[in-house]
Image (cartoon, rainbow, N blue to C red; front, side, top):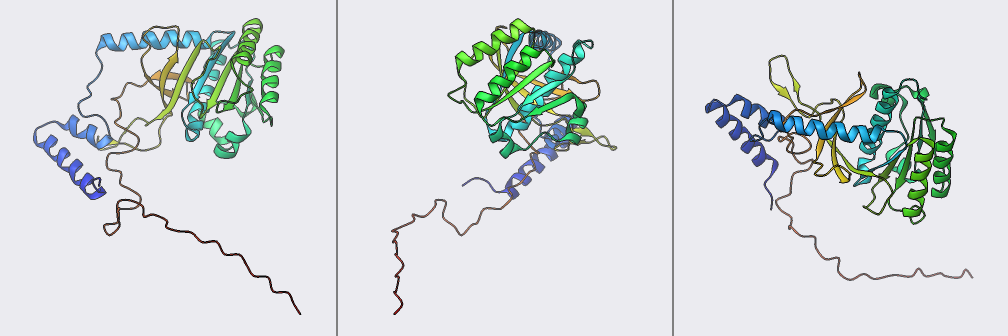
Length: 308
């Protein structure tokens, strides 16, 4: 049996009290904010190396004629994968202000049923104009592939985002190869948003695993830190296929004002949410720790009496 929420609250309170007694206010603040207490700031050399890898990766992603795949582990992370893809598309559009600015999002119907459509006020808060996004919802994967290829051929969009649910049989190495050649020939940019899919062979020169990460803790008026509040979108990026050797995991934060991704410079969070979060429903003390067997099941057929 795991420890209950009251025990966790008491444990964190004791840790904070000990940290303050020992004269370590930063240690206590990190505990309160849900951060690793022993994780110190990165050295200047580590920051410079991480910044260099980040800049090199962004240069490859934002280059024209590329095919990049963004993969989410679970369908619950569809918003993070789509948000990171839109962030890259906006950065690419800002990089070349004279180029076409419109984006095309070819959504997947199954993902839309589970995660919803693109929300106009949310897109505006994200830093993009709703008029600059064209949304398509084809029924079949064959139609989605045709639409993405036609959009690249038309050269009417700065970036095409193709959303794919899982690993469909009709979208494999041959299809990705054709899209990669089309993007290279037209100078277009194609982002594959693979939602809840497994790693598989692809012609994408770069594949990134995208996960949501906690937002930065906010400083209150009294100088304390408030964690778990709404902040700028933060993404945990893990390169799965990259030309850059030794690419590490990166934590990136999106700034909607200047429409750029930045390295997350705060301490590495210990997990989603605050360390003081408790279970929604406390564990019952009078129940067994394992589910009881169902037992035997009997089927009863209704009796049909014929009217006289």
